[in-house]
Image 1 (cartoon, rainbow, N blue to C red):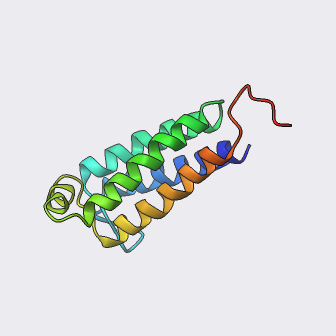
Image 2 (spheres, rainbow, N blue to C red; image 1 turned 120 degrees about the vertical axis):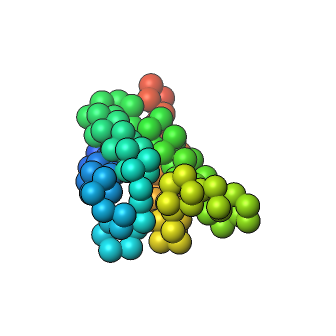
Length: 120
């Protein structure tokens, strides 16, 4: 149940942030974005809301967690940083946010029992 709620809340956040990002290069005063970044967040937000209302929250959180960590870490890798910034307009705040939320997503997904597995 916690995974489903988190997936829904994350989906709502990403949908709001992505929509806002279509109209502004800075969201919530610190998170930089561009159209590509905003559209990806809108898609991930819609999928997050959908998976939060179904039994697919675990794979969603695994995928989003890994994706967010990857983008966040790449921001700090020389050479890769320029690519991440040019494609997604990621700044330091976005990188730290992505790593933090990515770790939470993976921790939730990995700590919950798998569907169909009986916990004794």
